[in-house]
Amino acid sequence: MELRHIRYFVAVADTGSLSVAAHEKLHTSQPSLSRQIRDLEEEVGAQLLTRGPRGIQLTPAGRAFLDHAGLVLSQVEAATEAARKVALPARQCFTMGFLIGHELLWMPEALRILRDGLPNVDLTISSKFSPLLAELLAQGKLDAAFLRREPGHPELAYELLEREYMVVYLPSDHRLAQREAIDIKDLGGEVFITVAPTAPVLREAIDRFLESTGLGIRPSHEVDHLTMAMSMIASTRGVAILPVYLRTFLPWAVTTRPLRGDSPYVDLVFGYRKSNPSPILRLLLSRLDEMIASATGKPR
Image 1 (cartoon, rainbow, N blue to C red):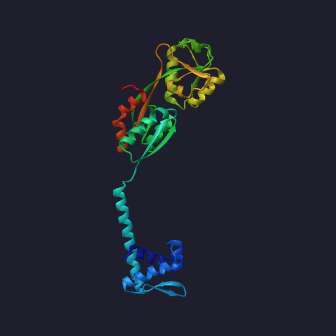
Image 2 (cartoon, rainbow, N blue to C red):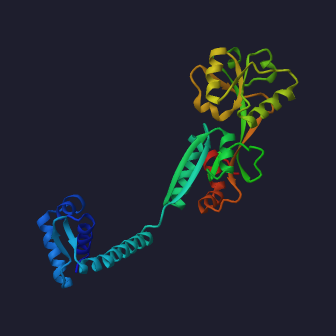
Image 3 (cartoon, rainbow, N blue to C red):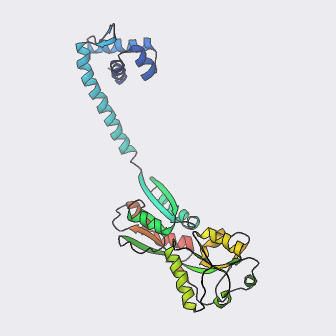
């Protein structure tokens, strides 16, 4: 008796029709299916099906055989699935978030480590603002994220990746663009552009620095995201103090100059939920120093 005989028999019993089972379920010809059923009946030694006015009917022997046949097919399916799980272990899933603008530098390094250490991983990537990344980490919707050190989340742990110093962003043809470095005093009286409170950690760092200068510089405009700052600088001919990584997105109309003296900074961190047991997370943490050195060229 062959396994296909049992499958054919169950298909006919389920549909009550040789033609329907042959064409819609088994994709074979009706004469071929009839021969397979006759071969099965010869092997069993009993008639299993009869033709009646309402189509194919099961004989008492056929009903008894059907009960066991369904069990056989279920066991075969379970055995097949068990073998596949051993041969092809289930792929692990990992979700990782990036503060918008940092994917270019940090994503390739994170992916390289995951490919080297755990190639059988399904990875989901998302780019969002830092406060939202922290919320998603806290809710367990992200396993790890590259973000700011957002307060108010005691369940999260942060590992320092890089201290991002800030520079002056200004129009390329601005009078101060001729200088190699800009003194903060030279920004007095300029249209000043800053980020909105939707980026609270960065906004606090900028405000703290401006207050420390004692120059009374007050923002004229706020922007919701950092790429919008470039458009605002070009259109208002204003200036801004922002992290240096944004130079990657500079349009031709905007340039940067370092600040003379001590520059403000904001930290970029690798965040995760303290209770997260993911082995993928542990791998990334164990090779964090390597990731930092590859991405920044500097040891941790």
